[in-house]
Image (cartoon, rainbow, N blue to C red; front, side):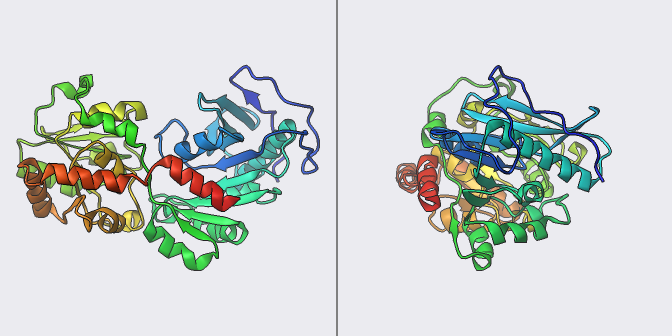
Length: 395
């Protein structure tokens, strides 16, 4: 039994605490207070700016949004909740837990921290929004105005997924009012498990990435890389086909492959090292157009495995908005949404990748017609429209 007492929530901004703490769950909402949304995510807010950030920053326009990250383990004597306010109006909550706690103790500590936070903020019946079913372990007791499961990935198929993931998801699906999926493959996998499932594939901030269609100042770490450059940004993990990457680099030594993104869940020593492969590390969302502008072609060298079976890569429409031709592995959602429409070249294996990249570099595409088709396809894919449709389904 966990007998450690949770420390109070602490802020790293200057905001004052609102109202006196009251006992949970009998928490009173103040008259006229905005609706509160509690988002539980497996992704750090400042890691990569993607689907959760695009949606939560929009919800923050009209309600209080709190983004609960996974715990950070530390040498502190008692659990506490660290709080950071973002420039987008979202407040990040990070449980800090002592090293050495059992799983049951961790769940109990997070439950107490969450209950204490809700009491301190006088929040009753918030909207609960889940990106990871594992967070339901410490939040499934809460009264909620609405429960949303935004299943952006099949997390159970990722390397290192907890054994309890599938059971936690089953429990979350039983409670959720509405389920959104990050692509059509995921929709097909989930629609038989819940009566209210809706597919919302990756959207795109067209204006942000369209900047890359013009000449932009070269980032310092890309400026000296020779051309042609074939680029890809992503979290570099088990979804990256390392053998394919090496084979392309070996087949065309004069091509330079540019990989932008943090290395996660794989040993960096496993990455193929060649004079024409360049790993530039993680970059901020605001920096991506400058990197894209300096590429000749974008490519998506995904492995075909369980981790990529249901993905709908956000970067596909981002590359297209930037005006870059794309060569992709045969990811089901990419083939359906972009390959069959002639917007993305699909290649399987090194020989096909090399041939497809060569064709794109040689300008075999009628560019004006292709760009017109790309722009038509992107018209209805804004994050703003996705947010509005999700909100309508919730209401």
